[in-house]
Image (cartoon, rainbow, N blue to C red; front, top):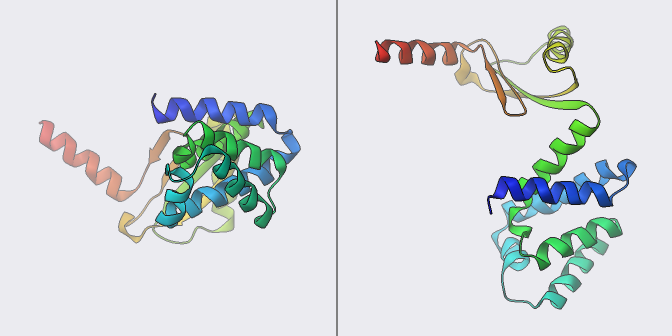
Amino acid sequence: MKKAKGAKRYAKQFLNTVDPGEVPQAIEQLSAVSSLMEKDKKFKNLMTGPIFSETENKQIIGYLGQKLKMSDKTVKYLQYLAAIKAISAMPEIVGAIVAAYLDMKKRARAVVTSPVQVSRDYEEELKSSLKGLTGKDIDIEFMIDPALLGGVRIKVGSTMYDSSIKGQLGLLRDKLIKG
């Protein structure tokens, strides 16, 4: 099974079991576990390895849930993922949950990469332009990449808008190579 396809299925299962008002908090909790798994190999091995039985894994996740003050539904979901050996795909699953939740709320997330800090006026103009393109309210995350030289690169979902000098030079190079 492909990770992306499975992640979407697990995201749908999660959103069907959690109340819509609790989803943002649950996403935060799942993101914390996912990022901990990415940063600490020992923790990832603890969560994904065959060292412990299914019962012991449930106890470990239950204890983790208590220490991190997780909701019961989030703990049960993590226990479910561990039982079916899908917990190793946590980053993909959390990403799919966030995307499905934003889609459900008629929102989209955009990652804007620019070579310098973006002004407040430009941010608002960008939000309204992206809303016109997508038909959804936009949550923007800004990143600074001095290698872009100028312009911006915007990623909304799986769509990329690249008006950076670096991107335009790359297109020009490709056209020259093709002839």
